[in-house]
Image (cartoon, rainbow, N blue to C red):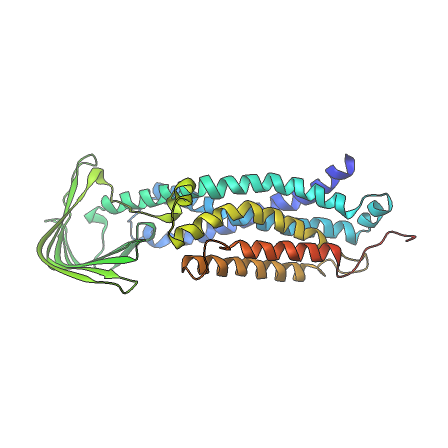
Amino acid sequence: MIITRYIIREITTPFLIGSTLLLVIYAGYTTSAFLADAASNVLQPGIIAYLIFLNTIPGLGVILPTALYFSVVFGLGRLYRDSEMVSMMAAGISELRVLVTVFYLALVVALIAGFVSTVARPWAFHMSYLLEARAMAELDIEKLQAGRFIDLKHSNYILYAGEIDRVNKRLRDVYLRTDHDEGVTRVILAETLYLPVTEKSVARPVEFENGYAYLLDRRGHKDSILHFGMLRLHLEGGVLPVGHKRKAEKTFDLAESGKPAEIAEFQWRLAIPLTTIILALLGVPLSRMLPQQGRYSRIILAIVVYALLFNLSGVARTWVEQDRVAAIPGIWWVHVLSVILLIILIVRPLWTIRSPGR
C-alpha cells in the first residue's frame, strides 16, 4: 500500500544515512587502535587495513539496532510534526498499523543483525586473532625497536626488549606476557630471546635463555614459577597459537558450554535480533509529538531510554560473566523490562494524538 511504502521510506532514508555515519565513526575508532602497531612497523599496511575491516564487522551488531531505533524516532517524528500522522489517523490509519509496518521493517534488519552477531562476528574475531598471531610469529627483528612495548591486542601478547642484537638475531632483557581466557596469565622474563629466521611453512623455534616463567592465576587459585636455563617454544607454520577465545567461538559451540563467560557471549549474540525489533517498536510511541512542538522535543527522551536499556544490557551481561546471575534469567530480564515499557507507552502514552473531530 502507498501509505505503508511512504512510512518505510521515511524510516529507511535516515536509517541508511545514520548507519553509514556510525559505521564510519566506528571504523575511525578502530583505525586509531592500530596506529601504534603501524608506527612500530609490527603490522604491514595491508594487514592493518584488513584488520580494520574485520574489527568493524562486529560493530554492526550494535550499529544496526541503534540506527534503526533513532530512524524510527526521527522519521515518524517528522510525520507528527508536519501533521501528516494526524491526517493518516483521520483517514483510518491507526497506530497499530504503523507498529506492524515498523515491525516488518525491523524484522528484515533483525535478520541481518542476527547473521552478523551469530556468524560474521565470530568469523571476524577469529580471522583478526589469527592475523595478529601470525604477525607475532613472523616478527622481523629488523623492524623491532629496543625499549618499546609491542602490544598485539587480539593475540594477547605483549613483548618488550631492552636491547636488540640484529646480527645474532637476539633480544636481551626480554619480557613476554600472554593472557588466556582460562583466567591464567603467563609471564616470561629472560636474559635473551633468540628469533631465528625460517620459512613460514617450517616450525619456528623461539628460544628463551636464563630466566623465569610465571603462571599467574587471576582468580587467585594457584600460581607457579619455573626457573629455566633454556626454554624453547615452537611456532608451527609460523603461526602463534591463539588459544581459546570465546568471541571467536562458533555460536553452536558456545551453546554447549557451561562457562558463565561463554553463556553471556552466547546470550548476547542471540539477543541482538530481539533487541533490534524491541528498539524499533519502542521508537513508535516515543516519536509521538504535537504539531506545535519542536523538532527535537522527543529526542532527549529517546536518548535517555536508549542509554538506560543499553547500560542495563551491559550490566546484565557482566553479571552473567561473573556468575552472579544464572543462565536463566541470564540477560533476558532486560528484554522483559523493555517489552513492559513498550506496552506501557502504547497503552498509556505520555500524551495522545487524536484526529480532528474526536
